[in-house]
Length: 515
Image 1 (cartoon, helix red, strand yellow):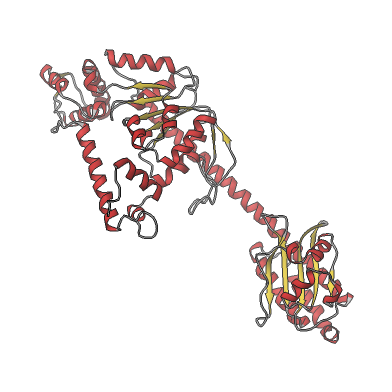
Image 2 (tube, rainbow, N blue to C red):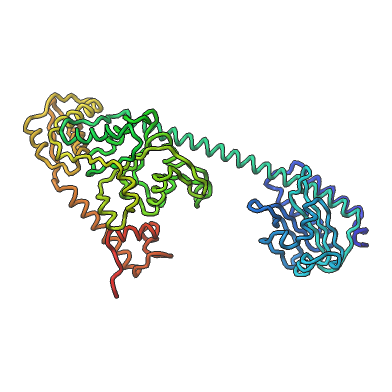
């Protein structure tokens, strides 16, 4: 008691100084200012510890957020709720009452036992309230000896508690405002990204996009596209690389009731495995390291429209499971969120792979295959539609002659016959590239189109690439003694997820050699 009285005017001046310090204090300095005030109060009252509790963001209970203690005393448990530590005192404080304990004999268990555990002999706890709502508690504790809490000290510390409460409330409002502004910025960025995406798509669609041809093979495929386009059925486009599967997807979309909205396109083989899930389904802020803002996925962008999933056979197994849910329930979940989002979209998928063989090899889910294979359309290779070759050549000549300012009047009959005899392993895409080069180097109105030097079919080339991949993965696995996961494991060295590596190993038939 004599210590408190001797503080006298000095303690009054300290409280006035502390209160003035919090006036117009910036939100980012509130926490440091409170902890400094706790230190100065503890030292002025010659006690030992001050603890401030606030309500947790994830639970309706009080947790320690600010703490100061003399260094010779142990700390308090920062990961425990106040109601677990001091149920009796917490109930009173949440009711707006001040709890002043001068002797542990005055309080019930288990509060008494907890205070003994942390060497508390006397404590003063004051609720922090804003507008009649308790937002926290500040405590002052004596650990060396019991002590009294005179009414004048309690009154003055209650005023300081009001200062703390108002400062913390200002900080909370400031943080909410900052978060709201961040969300507005994220929304603005999302709209900017969506607009940029739509502008790219519109630019793409403004280019040559008609399917050129009159052969029986192409007409049969176009007839199928015309049948399915008005429906909402899922379409699976199959065919070799370069046959024009994306043009067929665009054709189906343009004939559908969804044609007023831009079709969203995704090349599943072009997106790294680590990013494809967030690209398709979107992500919440903080879903993973580097996810600084919420991002809408391609499925959300395709709401009320069509999404074209090119090279669907290259989709990782872990993503195939989520795609199956989209097909079944028309719902998605962003990464970092468990809240389902309904999407109204039409799915058109394409692949150059034999998905039935992929199912047999375990690299493509059987249930997903059947969900996708509702209405399959095979896009014929160029070698099966040689009647269309002249039409295609002249459509590309018209396109590139306008683009490059060239004047082309004719192509020799011998040159055209040579083009028709060529196998075109790269199909229409290869033909287009060959014509583009010919127009670039043309110096006369008679266009001469050179055949590609290599006539190796696409299939052996594809096999060679697969063999190269298989040997590369086998080499890395051998180097690490076939250890896939962990630090310096094969997955880390190859720069992919362990689950993705295991899927690739199954697809390539790679198994650890028997000892």
